[in-house]
Amino acid sequence: MQAEHQLSTQRARAFTLIEILVVIGIIATLVGLLMPGIGMVRKSAAATKSQSNLKQWGVGTIMWSTVNKDRLPWEGLKDANDMSLNLAQKAYWANAIPPMVGELPYSKISDDAYNAQTDVPFAGSSNSIFVDPGATSAEFAPWGSGQPGSGGIQRQFYFNYVPNSQLNNTLLASSGQGQYSPKLAMKVASISRADSTILMLEMRSNPRELPGSDVHFGRDLKRHRADWKRFASRHFDGGHLLFADGHVGWMLNSEATRNVQGSRDPSFAGGDWNTNKLVWDPIGPATDE
Image 1 (cartoon, rainbow, N blue to C red):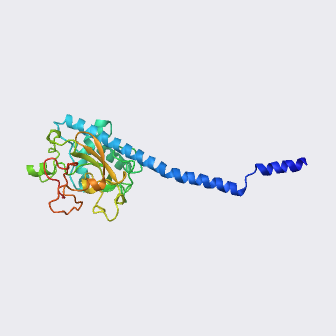
Image 2: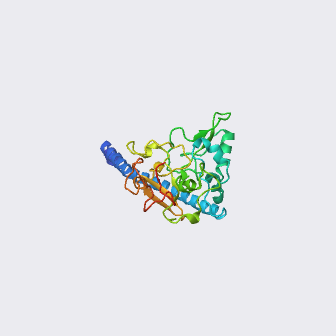
Image 3: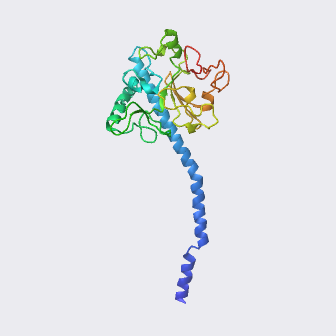
């Protein structure tokens, strides 16, 4: 009788297969419910970090302009193949701003990577102030130019935060400057709508941030400056913008890429992308180049 009682007790304490399957099902359901929340937390953390990075760029920009007769840093020659010429200039934004916030100028970062024949910091590989933690690199990034070194790696660059390429357009045109000059850049005091005028922006890191049907899908992202045509969409379908008064704001891509006439079409006749919310060129119309 005692042996039978012990066997009965063991059976009562054991889990049946159905009970185990039920427990597994409950755990799987809970994990399924938690995963979207965890993903959202990660996305929010990446967006917050990116916003913080852009604020650092704002602090550095204002500090640099303060000690350089109110001028903003040079945006650089437009063609990415001229990167070596850009990096040779101390006033180039990627060299000028970082030391103001305790970071290395990009010429140093680029030279060190080239000499070691390694990649510069790029999406998914670094906590660099130049890199957005929420970015996913496009194919062939980081971008190279010039002759390759002994390991087959060219001099490289990679930026997720870039200056507004429209900022000096009217200024340069009215001065007769055919090329972008390090000695001629917008002064902070010349910007009347500082709370709406864009100094820097998050640039798309990957074409897939936009749907294939978007009017700006497929734009060349091998760039070191940009405007609405390459504005990010990786943070909740939008991105962050740094304004001339130092604040950073978020905006939907579809809103930031719409002109004052209400169109997103880059070939819209007479379109002006200066709106009541965003100013790309503070002293003239912002038109499609």
